[in-house]
Length: 367
Image (cartoon, rainbow, N blue to C red):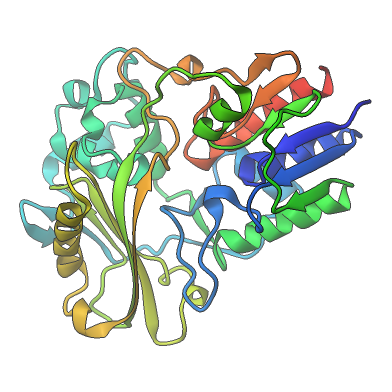
């Protein structure tokens, strides 16, 4: 068998490389950055902050694949206390009645061709999904797309699992597993000419288009302001604040994983989706109002701060009438395959990368 080349060392690239190597193929992986991880990269200790949510879902195939290879590592479930809702400017411990009604009717099947706002008829339910879409108006998306994710994210008991130490440790374990299976990993090398096939391109969709010299159909994705904070710990701080007014989200990640910050400090990430044409400064002002509600007196307690704009970082968002099958196909022809979170594969958040990587590996092995 000819060597299979994988371009990109994030979740998709590493899963694809491992899948090919486990099947007996020779595999080489190139990563343009000096470190692996792609969008799963996090800041180094003592404050380990990520570019958005970083949880695995224990009810999904991505989790099962990792567990089968003993790659999950230590992890924690979501705390059962400390969840708050910001609604009509006030903080509350229970969801509004309308939102509770929507979540209670989990048996319903949502249509693909209607918007979630039209189908659910509950603005609070749409805003609740800002955390999984980074979109200013999740209600405009396909009802089936939003509802399928809502039912999993807010299942009882919650399937979310927090990997101890964040994504950095998981990337390290994946890389070690790939190397042990014979994958040759080269970092700090940007591939500018497409190698001989079979090739798996596991980069962002924009980078893949440049490498392949093609243009993909426009794919919706989210854009939000992120604010990472380390503050001295206080018992009154919430674990999560779901902003039902602004589709924002605040999460104190040291509640399930204290290793993300020094002892006595809390690491918090807050996000709010940017509206069309809204400046970063205006978005940050709205975001700080959310932090005011969830972390009283936070400004006097800050020990570390980082701000960023997360652009196109939630993967693909499906509009009414669209499903994951309408995204750019994994098989590009002539022995070239795509993997990543914005291509034609199902799943929740990082599961899209996993599914596309496994499919790309299967196709590359038979190319």
